[in-house]
Amino acid sequence: MGTSRTNAPAKLPAKAAPRGRRIKAPASPWAEAPAREAQREAKRNAVLTTAAQMFNERGFHATSLDDIAASLHVSKPTLYYYVKNKDEILLQCVRQGLEMTLEGIEASRQAGGNAVDQLRACMQVYVDIVTQPFGMCLIRVGDEEVPEPSRTELRRMKSEIDLAFRRLVAQGVQEGSLAPCDPKITAFVIAGALSWIGRWYQPGGDYSAGQIAEQCIDTVLEGVLRRSGGQRR
Image 1 (spheres, rainbow, N blue to C red):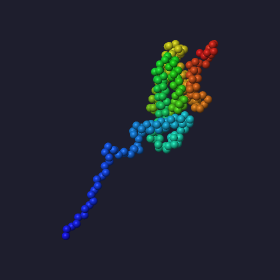
Image 2 (cartoon, rainbow, N blue to C red):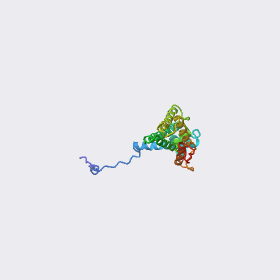
Image 3 (cartoon, rainbow, N blue to C red):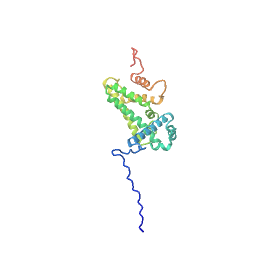
Image 4 (cartoon, rainbow, N blue to C red):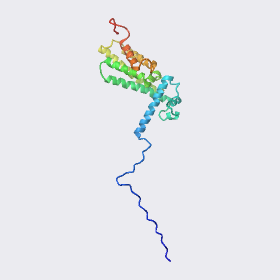
């Protein structure tokens, strides 16, 4: 008796996608590298700006990483993804203020004009910076709290600001647009007067930062004595 053979059903071929049509891959939940880096930098800047504002209001020692994290509504461990410790935060805040000032002064000088024009423009930049969080942090906290070797580097950068003012004062004296004076002492007076704005200025006060800058710069450059014709000298 022959063995009966069961015929298995034929295997159907897989249905191919229409020619010329590609299956769309799902969107990746991970951002591309440039976008990730931009997001990280934005968050790091938020950490630094918040820290600078708190250092200005409370003081460096009275501000903790817990305070900064709470203000940003993140956990303290999250901060360590962007900064190493509180000393590094302060270093970066002060460095930011210095770099902004140096870049602004250089841009003002590159704009041209005589020595007095450039000096006024540099003074304007200086006041603008010291009424902002990073510049205010530079003035209110200073580099004394920054550990070495960063302290030496920051003081070197500060000396560049001083030298820029000295050169412009010396140039103004040579041109005859400024009264004869000691450029070193005069630069100290200018920087000292304008730096102090960063200590007493409060946003939302009776005068805007621009109004304060205009009045203080006029006073430093023009003096407070009246001429016989009613003009200051």
